[in-house]
Amino acid sequence: MVKVVLPELGEGIRKATVSYWFFKDGQKVKEKEDLVELTTDKATFNLPSPCSGVISEIMYSEGDSVEVGQILAVINEE
Amino acid sequence: MKFQVLDLGLSEYLDALTWQKELHAKVVNLELDAALIFCRHFPVITLGRKASEASLKASKDEITGRRIKLFYVDRGGDVTYHGPGQLTVYPIINLRNFKQDLHWYLRTLESLVIACLRDFGLSAGRKEGLTGVWIADAKIAAIGVAVRQWVTYHGVTINVKKNDLDNFGLIHPCGMDIQVSSLEDFLKKEINIRDVQSSLLDKFNRMFKVGNITLGGRDGESSFAGVGGRD
View 1 (tube, chains in turn purple, green):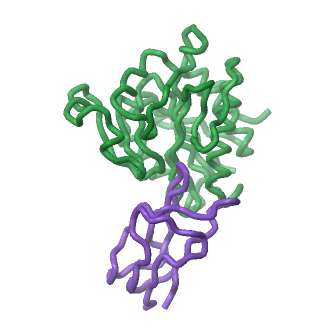
View 2 (cartoon, rainbow over the protein chains, first blue to last red):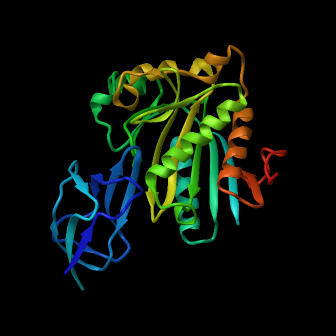
View 3 (cartoon, helix red, strand yellow):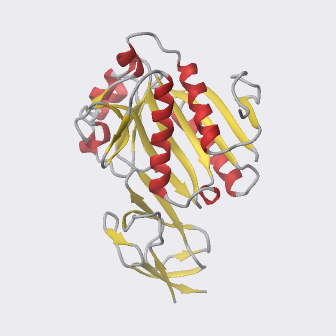
């Protein structure tokens, strides 16, 4: 199980908004594919999947605010 | 450093987006260190990730009836208008070579525009919490960026010509009711967009410490000779 956490996006950036999920629960994702798009201020940031596998849980919906270090999704590695 | 500058001239929004994605892939694959795309757009309204239909004042029919295209795009920010009286620049920059910091990048773009406007005798600044460049209470440049694999795309639009701002009346720029202005409005004279482009290119060149610049238009031909290189 790999936990995908919100990474550091810059100095003083404590949180970001989930603006778009490229996948849904239960779907297969490959390593480095865009997994989720995050927005802070007037910038969007695409977070790639850290591994290949099946997404077992998406913790935040589009529009939710997430803090750095919090778990965005869990992937069952293949 | 391999740094490519493209001048697309007057172009369709989606054509410029295709160029951005192509050059973005080259920078991600390290075939290029960075690229800048300069263009002016045919009238278009784009809605960023924060936008909703409430960001539009006019109906979609009214907008398309005015021959203005409408697109949802994957940049940050709300709604904005692009037209031929503006200079748009799309920097494709690998932030790993500078600072992996989204807000640093936004503030850097603002500072480059502020420096460019200073070349025209204008004193512009920021507004706390409102990304963009302002002169007094009027917005003169809009910013909205996207970052994939720490390489940037989308970018900055500067309002240059005074007669291209009416279409902002169709939207709530950035989702708010704000005043929008142009270089010509403030300077009370005609401004050549190409001169703004030369100044802005110089600022990018200094900031991102590029080496030899490959100047090229659509066909790889130099379309703004006399600009480029380092001091």
